[in-house]
Length: 356
Image (cartoon, rainbow, N blue to C red; front, side, top):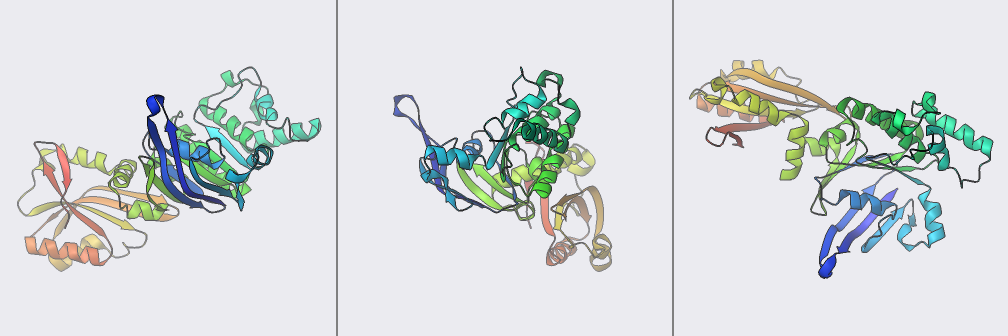
């Protein structure tokens, strides 16, 4: 559906200073994907998403949508092709002087549809996004979530096959964010929409995306299926994002604020365990004691469901003879469980990944 090949975007500021916003990006997005592009502010992700519909022309590289190279099109042909690409933004961009109905209808002004057809289409769209009862209201009378629903309806007015979402939930509270993400997921299934979602929150990726790319300093540093990236992150930045989204660092901070757990006995380890899918069919905790006489105390546990695959994490203490603890960890690793012995530096108040 979408092929970005060797995309670079360079801006020239005063005194001929160049800013390389996007550097040599190659990305393939398949039909029906909900593709998350995640990164901190300044990573280049918003510039990259604007390249997809050529609101920002790349300095070098090509953009191909469904077999058509956009970068080679003349203005009129490009405008026609852009109708296949809807876009929503963080701050909604609604016209405050027009009703909700009129905001959505404005997108159909040059569609060639009759007045009756436009009115019917707007009514269908407002019903689709769940705000048919707000048709005669004005943007100032709506909540943030309702405004974003209007923006989504407007973006869908010309029946696009692609929806670009640039930080579309960043201005919303957590509950409303989940509602909007649920709506987008539903639209992806009902309409077969290909969705590209730009965000700085891995939590958003976790909720809706089947694939993800991580950007840093204009480059894509890691990409793959969501479950692959969440379960086996290769880059430090990706691991930081994921640990924030799964709340593991917050849990460790709480655990280690207690002297009981920050000052372990000589025969104890503080260990982080992580697993994917069916790797925990066996009663692991009981096995550790029966096989190796290692006692396990569970301090924190969490299970995330990503693309219908469970991804679990535990923080435990393992107590027993040192050799037996080593054997217990080898047993867990053999079963495919990720293990990490954690060391706590009291002076710096930081957890250091000890590894095993």
